[in-house]
Length: 360
Image 1 (cartoon, one colour):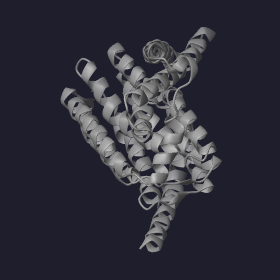
Image 2 (cartoon, one colour):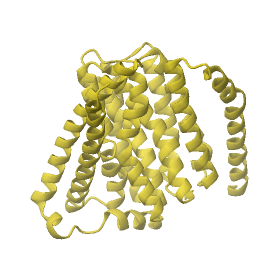
Image 3 (tube, one colour):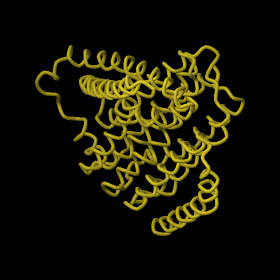
Image 4 (tube, one colour):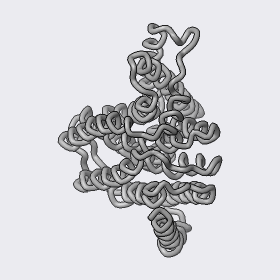
């Protein structure tokens, strides 16, 4: 395989991240200019903007006929968001969930994930499915805007500190802000094209499925903006931003990205059987694992962050072993199914029960 393919992959990722940064910065300042509150900007513009690389890649993949990359990118990004991004943020600084919104959003994320599995069960996410998902995104955005007014003063202050500062210097000018949004969109399209083309070439050269490439390299690469946002927020002590970005982006991935990609792809998105029978259920399990932690404002401790990161490493290892049909695959599967997953489930249930006793 030629070195130029890997260079195109790296360049595509770099251009995607740069485009997302320009888009989020420009859109945030425009929103502030027109009187939208910092909290709403953080929960919508920033959370959706950090998912813009996934949107660009999935739409480009769908139009190019690589539906496995389009769907795998969304599923893989949601798994990466919770296990890797949230895990790393918690490892840096234990996270405490204060937002009332998250008490609703996490069950919503679980419900949408299950709905996507039902939609994909026939092997396709079609036009009607896409319309339903995009309609859900519109309803969700309206809900976020209305509920943001009920947030605690501490959360309002946290978001105002991060997103409410007036732009200074060159970036305070309206034409610059508009140009930033347009340039960000252009870079997203360019980066998505390079990333999809190089990912397809790598998959064919390594003789592994496009779905695996979408679930790993593409998903992790397009989630870099979420990773950067949440890690920096955790380091600054802005823990609601770190958590809200992950959950908000994951909801947008399913409703917005999958919905829009299904609408613009002729005939809808075909879904590989491996995605239906393994990867989407893993995505559901990952979202479900957040319920005991988020439902009662439970602290996400460092050891839990390390556990999430460990599970992501195991998940990627499983995908690689399965793709290459390695001899170690049965041992890894038996270990996970017979020991690690049941132990984790019991631990989460105990934590949830303890938090319910303390809160009630």
